[in-house]
Image 1 (tube, rainbow, N blue to C red):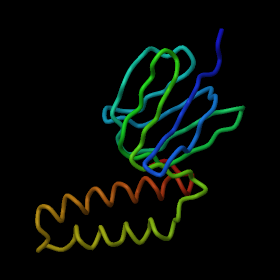
Image 2 (cartoon, rainbow, N blue to C red; image 1 turned 90 degrees about the vertical axis):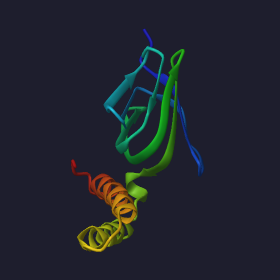
Image 3 (cartoon, rainbow, N blue to C red; image 1 turned 90 degrees about the horizontal axis):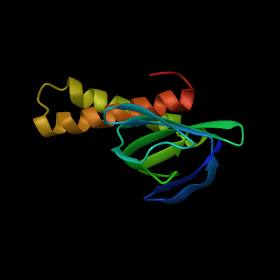
Image 4 (cartoon, rainbow, N blue to C red; image 1 turned 60 degrees about the vertical axis):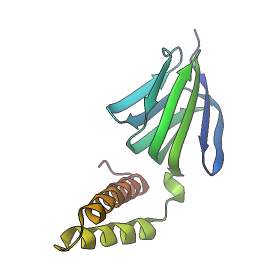
Length: 137
C-alpha cells in the first residue's frame, strides 16, 4: 500500500516544493484538512493557518494563507496566496505588522474598510508569529 503521495506547492512566488510527502495538514476555510496517501479527490479553499508537511521522515511547518488545495488521483497541489517556511519568517516584520494593525483597530475614527483590512493584517501577523515561534495559536 502506498505511504506517500506527490505534492506540489506553487505560490505566486514560484515553485516551493515538488516531491513526495507522507502527510500534509492545512487550514481550509472550514477547518484543518489532513491529507495522506490514497486521499479521496477534493478541492478546498484555504484559510489562514499553519501548514505541516511530513516528507522523508522530516516535519516542516509554514504559514499558509489563502488559495486552494486539490487532490486529484492521488496527486496533491497546494496553491497558496502566501506561503512562508517557519525558518524564513521575519518575526520582527510580523510583529511590526501586528502593532500597526492594533493601532488601526484601537483608533475610534477608523473607517469600516480600514477596520476590515486591519483585522485581516492582524490575523496574518498572528499566524506568521505563531508559526515562526513554533507555538500554537
